[in-house]
Amino acid sequence: MSAPQRRVPAAQRGARPARRARLAAASSFLGPARRFAALPRRSKSSRPAPSTAGGPHPVELAGLLNELTVRLLGADTLTHALDRLAAFGASALPGVVRCSVVLIGEGGPLTQTGAGRAGESFDLLQYAGSAGPGLEAARTRSLVISTDLAADERWPELTGAARSEGVRAAAVIPLDVRRTAVGAFSVYLDRDGDVGPDLLVTAMAVAGQAELLLGELRRREALTEGAEVDRAVGVIIAQRGCSVQEAYAVLQESSQRLGLDRRIVAERLVAAAARKATD
Image 1 (spheres, helix red, strand yellow):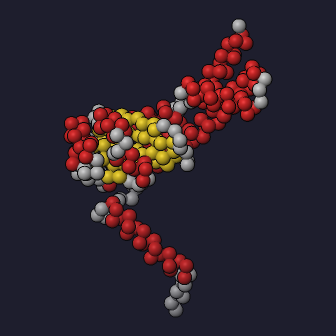
Image 2: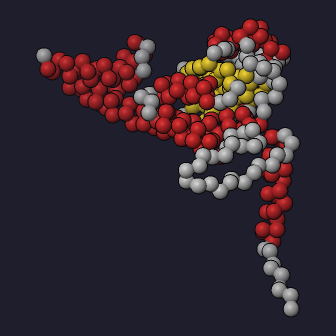
Image 3: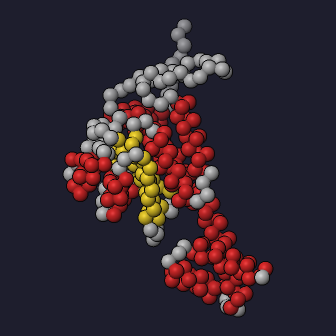
């Protein structure tokens, strides 16, 4: 007597073709299909076996992201974290000669940093002219690939710098930091041609992790800034006998007049008040 066939609900029957379609789309993006070997059984003392496919071993990728997390969360400020992210990309990603990061905050100035043995002038020219792969990825929030920057017609003003600086191929992954800023994580190679799926997948994993970490750092900075501003407002009220709204206006006016961030002005005001109290 044969076992009764299991009936599959209609919703699941419809989901399977959709799942196969998504997998097919991902395969076409990454190029020809590749076979990845299953993780081998190993003893506690053995090291992870190297990946036969040439890409990062899952354990190695996890270690890479863990190291990135430690470095970024240990940064004192968001700007310091961006410096660490660029240095990490330039040193940890294979074949990369330069890594640059840009963030564009709402109503704020552009923040850019980079690291690597080549391409510094290329980056400076790109951001000075407000045109290039990094800014395009940030503005369009889409992946930008260039197989030969020295001949890329999208940015003709950068072809000479790419040639002289030794940056040829590039992959740029957009960043979106918790609705407070958009940006891009750029990796550059010293050869033209395809970036390759292994480097692309690794760079995308690093960028995705960086988005979460930068968002957390931005949240911490906002909490710190709020507390420092509140203390400065208290100092202004005590000194001038004004209202809370007037104190905030004084602090904002001082920030604009000095050309400094409001948090920095607040810190200096509180520090000056503390010094005066101890004299």
